[in-house]
Length: 293
Image (cartoon, rainbow, N blue to C red; front, side, top):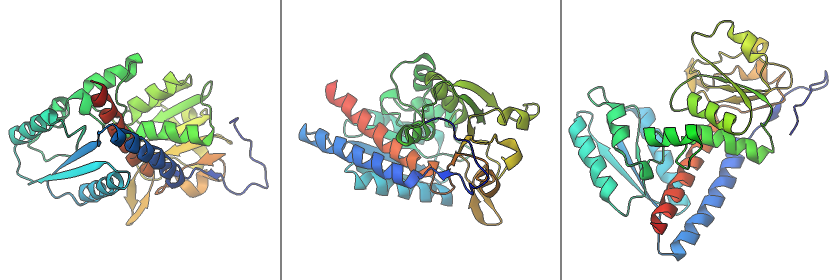
């Protein structure tokens, strides 16, 4: 898909419908689950929730429902806010050893007394369906097989469904987190885009973002990316999830940016559904690998 040029008669950018593409991905995953069932393998996903974070509870319920709908055996283990790090690490070890569990996801954030790094490192790389383990991060960086973080993987899958070829594009990623920014940049680089990563220390951010054919916003600041920061005809992917005056919004000022972008993802209904869809896909991949070992 070539970059599109806007005309004066154009009113809004093409909406990239994450719900539609997530539904397509889930259907593909359900077929893969059925094929594994013929081999006597039922993919199993265990989600561990520590504490009473309302947002985390909502995310976990969504993941459990989506997993069940495609035929994945889903289990949620809820632990109290006061759970110790040793107790959580012991549980992770039990799940690592459980052959019925193919994917392990520890919902973040964790309470202050628990080191997220220690817990993520304890999950066996073959069951790390979130793609956060250092071994999987290294695999992505070096072009080796491994699990890829669900959000950036979902972005790439969505671009594929849309028929957007990123090879040769100038891609700008705003944000450098281990969960989204860095793996997003690596995936785009692997797909032969020319990639720039921006962050809080970037000088004249708008000057950089205006050069982007493909702009991925993952900075965690509501409506931060405005119309004057986006090149006409760019493709804009909004990974942000924020609340301003009680209303959910992304990192992109959707109303103004959609007037200049060629294509744009909404919030909600854009990248979010694809993230869960990729979690399911990764779980089935983990089950498939276990079946051949």
